[in-house]
Image 1 (cartoon, one colour):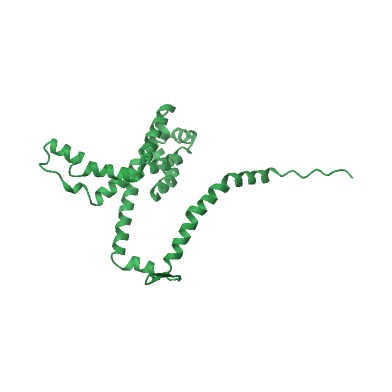
Image 2 (image 1 turned 120 degrees about the horizontal axis):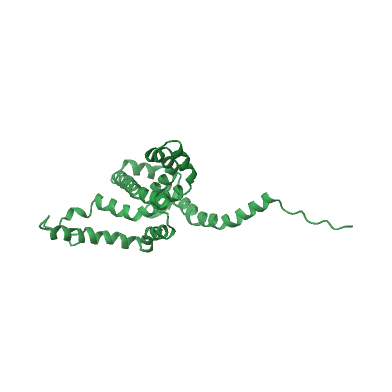
Amino acid sequence: MPEVSPRQPSAATLERRRRLFWLGPPLLWFAAFLVVPYGVMLFYSLGRMDYVSFVADLSLHNYIRIFTVKPYSGVLVKSAIIGLGTAVFATLLAYPVALALAFYIRREWARSACYLMIVLPWWAAYLVKAYAWKTILGSGGLLNGVLIGLGIVDQPVPAFLYNDFSVVLALTYIFTPFAVLSIYAQLEKIPASLVEAARNMGAGDFEIFRRVILPISLPGVLAGGVL
């Protein structure tokens, strides 16, 4: 009998296999180090403590305490305000930088240099960057040294440190690079032909930004804010 050659997989099947090959390891990593830990945390958050022993339970008592009992409720509100302030200020700083990278910096070497300067702070540890701002804002720090040197104040100002202002400032510095890259990733998807078409229709720069660039970039803005 003549041999029957095995059926070759279709192009769609090959494409699915290729996607599975590339997406499989990241999805496994995501599940092992994000989904599973969050699931464990959720399980324990629904339980309760009996002296020093954990008792599994399906109760929302712990979540009710967070929103109704002090100091949990106050800390939660304060954290939300600080997070919102950080998101707003980081976005205000990041958007012009991302806009310049996407539309105004034409030379490849200049864009690469700017990109490197944005990524460079990630090479430093989180605590190192936080302590750097402590050094700047402290009583013997750079800011107070400049103010005293200019004769604006006679003694160090302690109000720059250990308050909501300094926390938001440090967090804004730490998270602004994330917002820049998030917004830039969305802005670079805008084709130049779309902007040129709007310009040919008589739209000015502000109108192009308001009706074309800003709506398309909103997912990047929201992603940066969530970070």
